[in-house]
Image 1 (cartoon, rainbow, N blue to C red):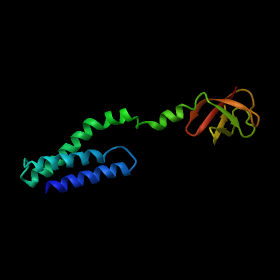
Image 2: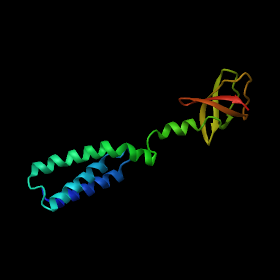
Image 3: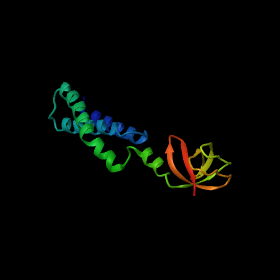
Image 4: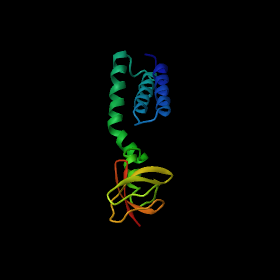
Length: 144
């Protein structure tokens, strides 16, 4: 394949990575295609099968070596876990009365959540309470 086709394919794959949300995969294939195109441009890979062999080897090797450190540096993995854990200790406002051990709703950060009163005292409507745990999408609340 001509060197300029490899470089064009690499640029297209890199652009697709920018256009799609997710886990950073296609950029490694784009970089591998650009590298193969550069090597072909200097005439070091004369046979097509060598180009087609080098392309996935480079891409998969780069994926294996650089993806996790890149995600760690960009802090893209386990994003949701940190967000939910940050709710513990926050102050929520009950939407209605919730008896001890009962379920209801509470507002926290502008969103209505399902809530459970894990305290010994009943919670009245509009009462401020502390989030002591998050169980899925359920806030466990206790009066302040």
